[in-house]
Image (cartoon, rainbow, N blue to C red; front, side, top):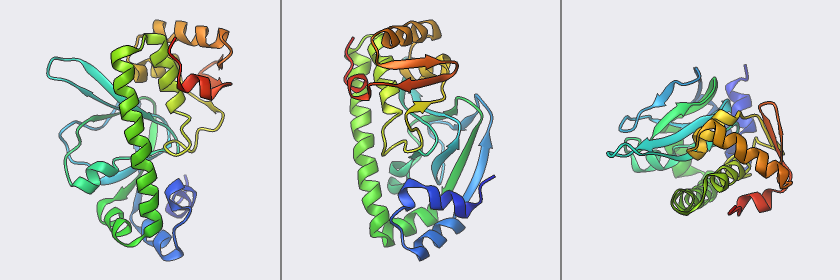
Length: 224
C-alpha cells in the first residue's frame, strides 16, 4: 500500500506545489477501500473529502424523479473529483458507486480549503480541472440527447483518456464491457456490439477486460 507521502507526490495536482504545501496535503490525506457495487456516497449526502481514485473505477450518476438514470462521468486511476461540492459547501448532487473494487485517496475538507486559500499552484490546477469537467458534462448532455448508443460508447470511452481528468490512463484502460455499458447508459450486449464496430473501424483494439485506443481524436468526436 502506498504511503500518504507517495500518494501526494504522484498526484497530478501536486506537481507544482511547494514542499510545505505537499507536507500539509500529506497530513490531510487518508485512504479507504470500497467493494464492487458499493455506494461511496448517495445523492443528498455530505462527503467532506476531495477524492482521488488510486485503483478501481467510480461512476458519478443520478436518477431523476421520473426514474431516468443519468451517468455524468466515470473516474479511473489518477482522477480526482468533488471539488465543486467542496468549494460550495453543499451536499452531493449525484451518487458515487464503485464499479469494481476501488481504493480512494481522501483529502479532508480543511486541508483542501487551506490549499485553495494559500496555494496559487493548487488553484491553477482547480481552474484547469473545472474547465475540463464542464466540457465533459456539456458533452454528456449532448450524447444523451442526440447520439446513438454506439456513439455514446465511443465518446464515454474517449473521456476516460482525458489527460487532465484521468492522468493515470495511458494508452489503454482496464475496463469490462459491463462497466463501459454502465458509464455510457447502455446494456452489456450493446456495449459489446459497439466496441466490435469501433474495432472494425480501426479506432480501438479490444482484448480481455482491456481496451487500447488507436485513434483518440476520431473517437472523441465520433457520431456513428
